Image (cartoon, rainbow, N blue to C red; front, side, top):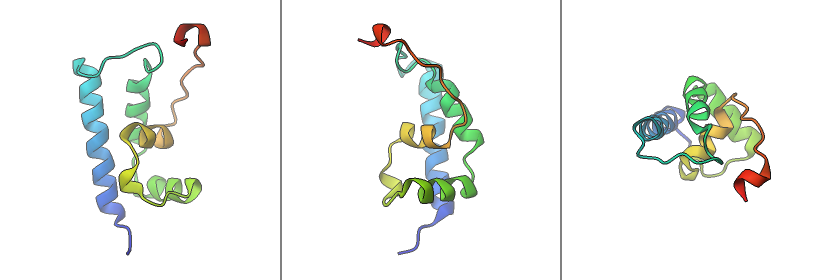
Length: 91
């Protein structure tokens, strides 16, 4: 079965847009550990091209790309590097 990069791109973009809206409207609660997710999602949306998706699939050896979660795709496609969070804030 051949993977449709067009369908996968639309799927990922749609999920990222929903995630972005949830972050912006407060539907998704931000915490210390996920406070930079908005920047990650925005960067992922900017980099959500068929070429980047295909390269990510090859680099990460993704077998079932439609089953990967939204934020996993966001982190794989994003160029935003979130700063390290001191463990004392999270624990």
